Image (tube, rainbow, N blue to C red; front, side, top):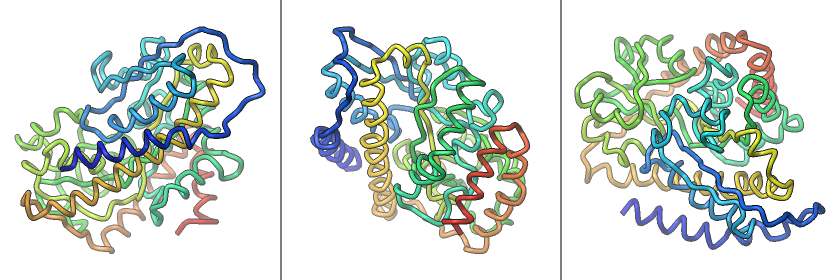
Length: 354
């Protein structure tokens, strides 16, 4: 049932691609006959919503370039290990790296902010507000900071952020309602989320998504932090039958980076098409899939015999306070880009947040 919904959503999105690009024009000369064939590796599995939604992005680009920019997608680990994707992107082994900033926080520290600080996107759910913070606020100050950092520190072009909905989703072998319930648990977490859950009493480890089912089954970890599709899509509910709501943030972000030489080789018209397909096709396509997946989780609770746990409001407030008072300042101190990015996020919240 879930996959049939996904299919129908993607079909409707692909039908609408032509409408999205209507009126897109450029004063640049017509590009030549050169064809570009790119490889995109997504750090996630073929069951992941981010991977599934790539079809709409790839098809939009193919249509608008008359088949001259063709992108082939690969799931995590297919070409290189997930944690090596940024380096592979820099060297041109893959033209597009699709992953999360938390993977390379040691190389590009601002990756923690581009992934989303814990609680960065709390208090709102709409995609418009997410896009406003990242792409529009103060003339795109946040996206420009990310682009400068990734260019200078990793040598790649930062295409942008996309929301993969609420995060972290705590998928657990035991129910979690209060701060006390976190004490002593082993949590799979990355980036600033790992910093946060350690600060509230857990220990953390990193395990790729494809290995999470076995890790939960064997008790290697007690809690998986992921986006919502891991719960049913990866069958984690079978070995971790509790999912906690609401999430600490209503959004978190993955990103795409592009090999700089490959990006520079594209005609300006094609660069515009890629940017537009990312913002106007991929972002809404992905967000709609996640909205649908959350509804599936609620609809199938009785049939699949798992429990949706409503975390106490006091617990969420305590977690968010730890994030903003302890984790955000620590991240801001790492380098000039993290300081700039955290300052931008704070200014956004002063004007629009909670």
